[in-house]
Length: 166
Image (cartoon, rainbow, N blue to C red; front, side):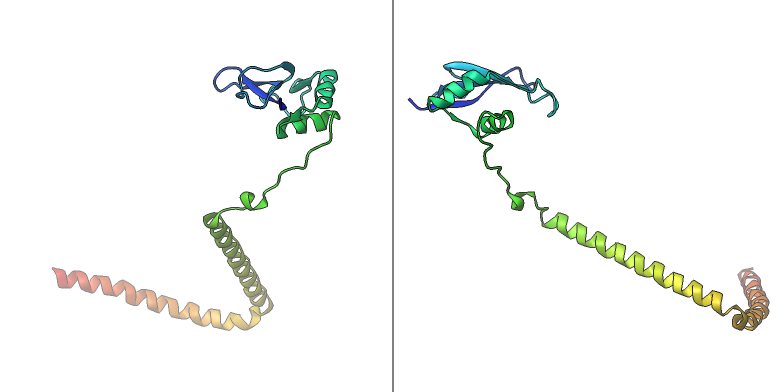
């Protein structure tokens, strides 16, 4: 008979609670088991002592009898120091963002670079304007003299249009 140390689900809907049991590996997950070795409550915090409770004497006995722990139970046993810590599964390809998310990240980076360049350019223009204010003063006076004439021509144009409409 092949023995397995695994989790058997208990608890109600949306409120899982598991029993760590020794069972025949051919039996269903929540079916008949040989012995209950502990409990696992995934609703508690990871650092809570009550999250995983194990009867260490019985666990070592069943491991000596040849019972094979499931991956999740093997992690519990490894953290408790009752067995070797299993090799951690890691699939970096699964964790990568998909194509659309990568495109959004690229667009965001490009916008950030464009904003930095615009800020640098504005800063350089401000420095250039600060360095040469004496040279621009006559130009400003000349442009100030031209603006009243331009304003007058724009004011006269609407008045002429009103006369044509009447």
